[in-house]
Length: 427
Image 1 (tube, one colour):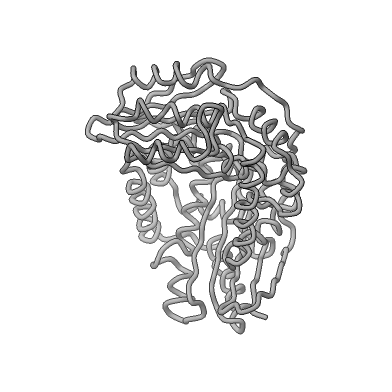
Image 2: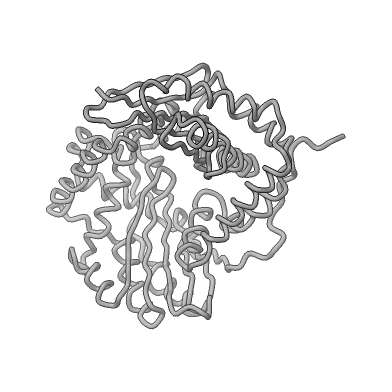
């Protein structure tokens, strides 16, 4: 009997980094690269927007801002100056599934700069006066996001598709809610989730294993604040899409319409299907030679541009197709996208086309793993939503995918009759 689904296997080649499980479940991922004079520390925390109680929406992102306000020993503004004085760079990001904070510096001064990052992250003071001051910055970020039509389109699509799960809520939060938050609530959130079992520390570059472990033991392992307990966050499973969920928004002075369509995919627990959907996304509109790009942009000029993307998420992933176009072409373009979905379901992709897109994705993966910062981000991401070792299997799994498997995935997860769609029109 023919095997319908390719067998998902653990990586055959050894994982290039070393994984340590330290006290209380804290994870360290370390890779020594002798050729580079740079070290990257990337600290990932399972404290994204998905962990927020619904009444604290936006807290995880707001906390990201407040982390950089320092600790009892590091006053506001001092951390950035200390890192920049050593020629280093630091930043952070918050998503639904995680928050992460990263530092890039020369290996000759990493022993001096890393303790600062560890302290502000684990022992954040969150002063009342700085909380009030930074609130204005976060509120301005929210207001600014509504001036970005592409952000509005994507966020509205998420709200349309995820009507139960926190993935439908904005990571930034809502202005009315944020105005009600207090520093004590944020301290509670921080002490609940910024704990060792939720944390993966990645060090990549010119630092040897023994030195990385010494830094962890001295500045991380025993530096966590007393644990707190914030209100419970509930993440309900999102049921399958039934029918077409449609949202339309009129925006003043919008030059071109936006059309965004989305389908729910599996979470990280079905990683092989996720890789397959990433390949389907590339076939649809992932490059200049993709089907929808060639047909709608290059040949018939029905869109100014069109692209697709697959976002692998912990619970339920998302495949989107987005187009920039004129109002009179909206209906035709939506129908053409649905036609290409049906084609993927009913006609196997040719070996020639499949090989081309496999090569493209594998090369993209290679190009995204060239620097210590890219490697640290990759290991931390997979270490947060799954396990670090899975970060290296992507090329091998992509190469194993067969045309019949893509047809099965298209029938299971994509549909011309069940999807979410958001349209932005000019007033």
